[in-house]
Amino acid sequence: MDEEISKFSRYMNRHQFVLFISGVIVLTVLLVAIALTLYVSSGTAQLDLSRPGLEKIRTQVRSDESFKGFSSSGSLDDASLKQFETLYDQRLKEVESVDAFGNDVLSPKSLQIDQQPATE
Image 1 (cartoon, rainbow, N blue to C red):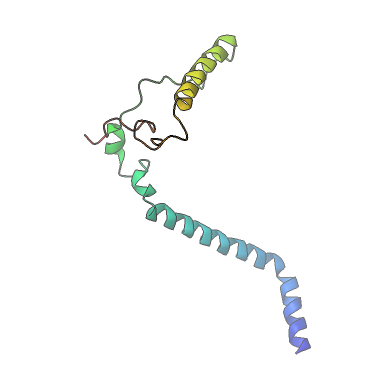
Image 2: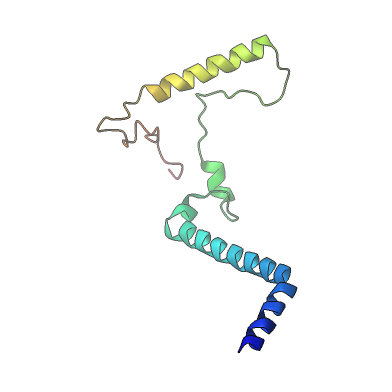
């Protein structure tokens, strides 16, 4: 009995790295399977417009023309920093205007989804 345990112990010590890598791969596959299951079962997959085959719907989605974003390219000087601060303050006021403890926190207006759907 002790001889079998020592053989197993020597085998484990000799192949420790390979067993560790194999365990990590098995754990990774298991976690990815769980994540994909949650992705499909929660309904998030239906909202993901980046999937192949949804190019037609992607072109129909209306963009928010009222907000002009900050340019990711260009010079970084005082004028661009002031422009960023102005845009940031505008969005901050919109976010702060919603009463986080009110009854209508999840209303379409406060979530800003009260626009017409893209499929119409």
